[in-house]
Image (cartoon, rainbow, N blue to C red):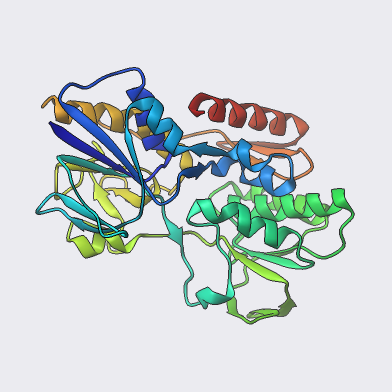
Length: 358
């Protein structure tokens, strides 16, 4: 009997669980290990922040999904990977052996040199609801990070405050222009939109220090009632400690088959991995979703001792950025526009995604 362990409840593993409801693999058993029984869908974080969704809308019950898929679920955190003996150690002291293992554990938040006890983050993602509930009702929250997540959360908090008649200033600080990977025209248009909605925005400013009530950049000091750091991903220390092939910054290094460069029985997907032939590929949920079918197919083929298939990242993809008040900005290549229609499309896509896995 072959034992396949899925570590983490990310997009790719959720798709594997769904496939196991439709396919059976002889002489094999699957185990899902996750730090929390719920996996929260980041695509709906902005809507939850604004109050458009309740917690039940944005989460998948991994225990229930596992049960439906005939998979054993263990709520625990993996503290050690022993690739030579093909086993993992859990935080509760239990040791599990595997024939094949896959990691889809996401990433942490890059704190840089900032004191971690002075800021909030939304990772691991099951901490998101409690973090946001506290921050969004505080009078002067500051969000650090000008990527999609930072912009969405900032505008969603602001929209909620307006709807509820709450006073206070919401501030967004970015070390670069907003959406640095987008066309400059889209970044400039988004910055103008943020200011027109009343968001206080500072771009091209590095945060130097965060104190209890003050956040300092190279240009100014800003009073705050809480700071949320959305400054990019950080790798788990798990892979570096285990001795498997990693990038310099600690991400599991995988081939285009999503298979470890050093250990063929180890697979990975999503933000916790870097593809060796696409080392600059962004840590983006779009790619994690696309990797799901490839990961499932290759787990099957490994068990059946067949040749593996490969993952090819798409060069262009549609992105819809919530801008608060049931509005959104749609971006595709160099095309972008903002309004009610993109938000309706985003809402439809997000709800359809969640319905599929519940």
